Image (tube, rainbow, N blue to C red; front, side, top):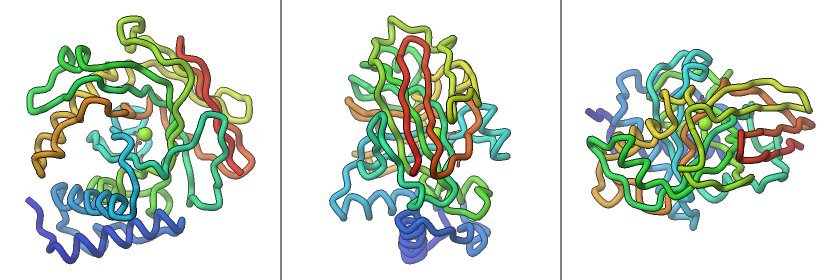
Amino acid sequence: MAVLSQEAVASLAKRLEQAQLTGATINKVTDDYPNLDWGDAYNIQWAIRQRKLDRGGRIVGLKMGLTSWAKMRQMGVETPIYGFLVDEFSVPDGGVVDAGKLIHPRVEAEIAVVTGRELRGPGCQVAQVAAAIDCVLPAIEVIDSRYENFRFDLPSVISDNCSAARFCVGGITRRLKDLDLKTLGVVLEKNGEVVETGAGAAVLGHPLNSVAMLANLLSERGPQELNTIPAGTFILTGAVTAAVAVQAGDAVRARHQGLGAISLRFA
Ligand code: OOG
Ligand code: MG
């Protein structure tokens, strides 16, 4: 476990957050620290999270990433990972994203949930998740790796908060019992054309598996008060399809079966 000194973790967190805030690419963290492991990578991610909190930011959710084969194939990385969402990432439905602040943005259609009860691993299972979900919402995530050409290895992307950049949530809120998340169809459009289609089952067989995995992954980490999913947590369960590159001038819409449509523009 974890080989990096606290100083190295702090300096990498600063470099990565600076790259995110200024929209500049940086070397992969594993270029400088080839032995860096997952423990180090999550330490760096959590140091970025602390920097946001220290500046008055609010954590407004959690995200799972690389939970569908489409994404794993696209990125060449085959293990699901998690990151955090902070208020500065939030864009309203129908809102505009300033592409000039991002490096090489890509959009993903995702199924989002909000928990009504705390979830705790290890051993968290779909049944506990089902009992804890308050509601389901459609979401678009905008990812933007801080690494050149969107190329990374697992420790590098974990350190980079799983490429989190922006997200949009809206549409229709539904109770879990009124939906079949497995067959829930998702259509992603760019400039009026369908570019990706999928169903909830693409996400680890069922999007609730992704939430269970998140609870189990968090339980592997301290500090104690942060290693559960608290009640009222908004969670992006991971892209249903491959991510689609966008640039200034593009308009994107996600249609989720039974959950309406949400859209974003890039300017
Ligand atoms: C990592 C983040 C992946 C998802 O939904 O799979 C992600 C990346 O592909 O840059 O957000
Ligand atoms: Mg995503």
